[in-house]
Amino acid sequence: MHNMRLIARLDVKGPNLVKGIQLEGLRKMGNPNKFAKKYYDDGIDEIIYMDIVASLYERNNIKEIVRRTSEDVFIPITVGGGIRSVEDAKEILRAGADKVAINTAAIKNPQLICEVSQRFGSQCMVLSIEAKKNGNKQWEAYYDYGREKTGIDVIEWAQQGYDLGAGEILLTSIDMEGGAKGFDLELVRTISDMLPIPVIASGGMGNIDDLEKVIKYGHADAVAMAHVLHYGIHTVGEIRDECLQRKIKLRIC
Image 1 (cartoon, rainbow, N blue to C red):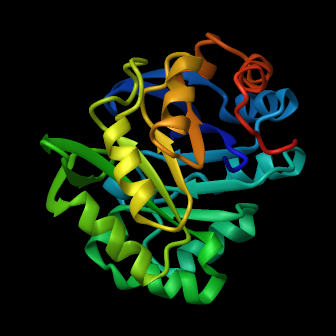
Image 2 (image 1 turned 120 degrees about the horizontal axis):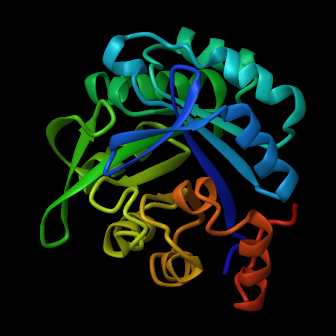
């Protein structure tokens, strides 16, 4: 088993960290910089910032949050939301991000995946996929934070994204997101087994059993967690200790 990464996912709306259920019913949680610093101090491996309204309003206000975080958080930071061009990616990376996660703009212009990958390296280009189940082992890709359908099959889209140069997949299950009832294991396993690049499972973690299942059955390379951390159900330290008890190999922090 590879060394798995623990990632804190922080969805941001304006100046606030927010959390919802199935990407709706958002609740303000507080200052995202304070949450990021706490998770870093507690031993998280990476941070994902997602500006959840940037694509909808065609703006990007997250740069200052990223800049402040990068001053005292020294782990990889991935930023998504509102990145519509190579120039947008460049600005986010200059603000302190290490990787960019692109969903909406990639669906509208798949060639952007290739352009970002060629300019900054495939390790920098994370394809963010919002997936909603629509049949037995069938999922449809959505964009604009789960608001808009595409008619695109998630399996085909993930393969296309890899072929175009994506170096990692952030795979969010809309059905399971925020419910704290576990990940969509079949979704994660299908994509993880199909592609040779890392897959980050996102959406559904309510306890450490969920994490263990998505690693051992879903074959995820990393787990993005929000609900379980933001609501204080477990600390990062507790999760790390329990993973070690269960023989789950972690990246050494």
